[in-house]
Amino acid sequence: MLEKYLEIKDEVKKALEENRPVVALESTIISHGMPYPQNAETALNVEKIIRDKGAIPATIAILNGKLKVGLTKEEIKYLGKKGTEVVKTSRRDIPFIVSKKLDGATTVASTMIIANLAGIKVFGTGGIGGVHRGAEKTFDISADLQELSNTNVAVVCAGAKSILDLGLTLEYLETQGVPVVGFGTEELPAFYTRKSGFKVDYRVDTEEELAKAVKAKWDLDLKGGIVIANPIPEKYQMDHDLITTVIEDAVKEANIKGIKGKETTPFLLAKIKDITKGQSLESNIELVYNNVAVATNLAIELVKLG
Image 1 (tube, rainbow, N blue to C red):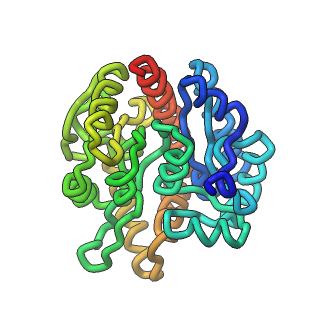
Image 2: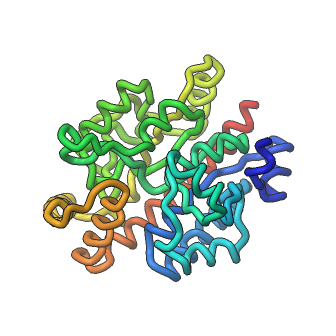
């Protein structure tokens, strides 16, 4: 029955059958994260980083109602050109995008779901969603966090986006039993910056050590993912005070305009890009490259462990 909905690209299928390393990639970053043509160029560069390290990339999206695991260059460019016309797709949206035969750009949550269906265990992305500021009144909490508690995929990211309430995000993940691991750091990175003021649960300094912990978790049948928080490279991080001020101003404007739910993040990221004159976009691209390199090394080490 699953074959009716799931379409795995031949090279991805072959790599999985031969137990070679595969890294999942999301598509919201293409359609909703950056303007064209930078979005398509970034996505293709990300795939090249994975290939150059000896692994296979599997960019995930829904096209014409099919859950696609691994896209062609033409499909990536298609998503880039369509941009925000493509439906931003989380767990709740999947059955409707599929049944209506629409195009869907997968978030962290839906990418995890589809990667897991295909048997892919490592996913490299920009940042995870989390608990939004003011969530004690709005209950605005990303479905990414619930997915991390349920789905066995390791997610390498630059922490949670700093537009969120990072303290409450960590509290939520702790309640759900999701480990938050700092890769080479004891502090949770805050997407554009390496610092947040919040501690991670564990620090791990090599992908080999990380792979052993990930394998142990799933060998023990401890359901759910793991957040691997990988700081943005120092040379690309933004000034902490500047980005904090910019985010606070953007959050106020979103509240005044009544922007809520899944529209919040794209609005805030666009405002931040405008105010920082594009510096945030460069930082965003570089942190994705950095995360994907670590994700690929992790996938390689997991394969070695069998």
